[in-house]
Image (cartoon, helix red, strand yellow):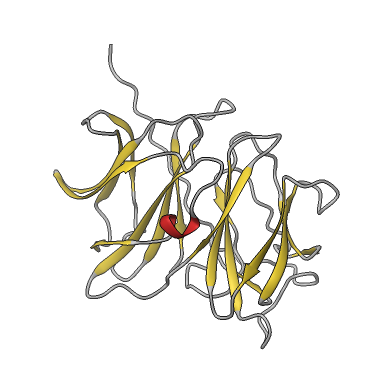
Length: 245
């Protein structure tokens, strides 16, 4: 029987909010920033609120999408935020009810990724510091997050043509209490305007569970996070890309 391989990728829509009435804007106090990666299978369309203020304007997030704030990083995914202890809510109804209600520390001049994952009624989240130091030469910086609940441990190979370029081995589902620091590092790989395929394989084997085109996301000088999502709430294993820069 032929093996079915799902080909799917969620690309970032880099559109900026058309409604700035309640949006948080860059100023001398808002020197931190965060990007939201929404990977909760079966989750509803949601808003992002910072200290009770709607921060995503008219752009609501659906499963497999990311924020678009127009802040730091030319991927446009970052939302500016005032430094210090800030409350983040992920809500389907502008704060009346919340999938996530978390208070975290945001340091000056630091970007973060706020990943929301796992299924309702209690989705999980992790705030990951982002190092946006530009890649050297023609490299791309790539990070992989395993956000697919119940998914097996995997190896992730970045393939160009018929040759495997870089493999990240032994990547397990991050679980309920992930270590944000250990998830943070990026790996340099040779950049290319096109031609890369991302292969997610069962760990220690050549069994491909998912293969997707990286499109133009691995252009030299870019910084990206690849996330495995799905495997719950009737959602198949798939992948999404968050472009940091």
